[in-house]
Length: 553
Image (cartoon, rainbow, N blue to C red; front, side, top):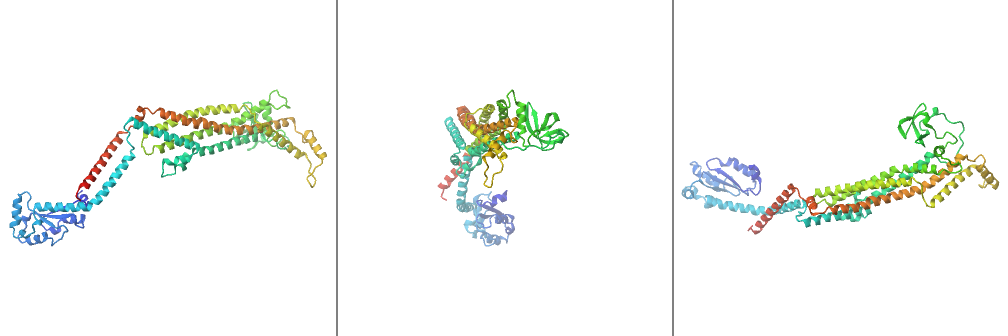
């Protein structure tokens, strides 16, 4: 500890050494020289002058005159401070050696004067650095005070600050929802806040809307592929039907579940028992399945014909069954549920993440953990409630979509286009190759038309029914899916985003009573004690600066 104080530049070292020992080798002088190599703050005080051995007076006299073992501030002699001052003056004034010393080198009064002068010189040298250090400490302490936030002592000041946070949060949340990202930058001028992915809510949700559209379109395509493509020309299968013993991995099979025909893919076989990708934990016996293409075609369209047969009522085959059509639509709409709920979850999680991020940014400098916790818990509660309401609305929308309805004229346009495409494909298969110019005779066209209607290219009644059903299903799903992928994001924007802003404003401002705000902004005991400590430190430093300014240094 002594060494630590000795090394401080503002410490004056008084090296006390007795005159009756070898002062050249004393430890205290060596230690003082190590701590103060320049000697600007060290003075040697020589005591026990009356105990100097006879004959050694000259060496001590030379030392006090700073002729031996020189020190920058020199030496000073005193005698027995516990005796009266008059005896010290008489001793130095009457001694044959000591009376030759200059008077400023001996005596306690002169020592006091020298020490004061040394201290003043040391202060002058250290004062600029001291002032710099005090200013630095004041700045650091004020910065620590600033990090604790502004103390809000009156109810009015507390309400004003709370309302400011609420308004700033709502404004930024609205900007994130509407894509006005430039309004987010003023939160922190040192960083480009608008570039943070968490606050680009609208951009993120637009991406999820596109993924949702793609997933719904993919389910529509998959549904039609399961039924097969009746609108394309078919080839007659040569040979008899396959035996169930010949089933192999990868085959498409027709399975009847809950009075509904479904086309599944075989994963494993065990004799005539199969394990399918759609039901991977249950083996299906031979009575529960048949080959999906086991009757007349090899392109999978039998799935639709079997589905029609399994769901047909009393209608004649010359009339397309509306009930079967509804069943097909319901089957497709059920596949829309997963991407719909997935989109709802994206809206919920991204809105929640953006809200939490903006809350942290708005309250970053306040250190108000209670307020931040209140904002985030309010976000979670409001969003959770809105998510449940949105889920009910989406389930109701899916129920409505399961009942085919539209007045969109594009349905008939699409249906005509598909019918023409099917007829064109059959005519192309029936027409002979043209001449070198690609021309065919009118007779060949007439013959081809007869072949399509009654000849070798004519379709069986069940194939015609499947063709009409598939065309109607494709046309309707084209219109309905486009309507659905627009309605769902619009509903989510209204049910989740717009309502969320209104609910948050109501919840946050509704809680702004004096008692609630005072509780939220109440400082912890440790924080209050720390603030008081820092205020006292600032006051002490400022008083020190005033003293320095008023001093003669």
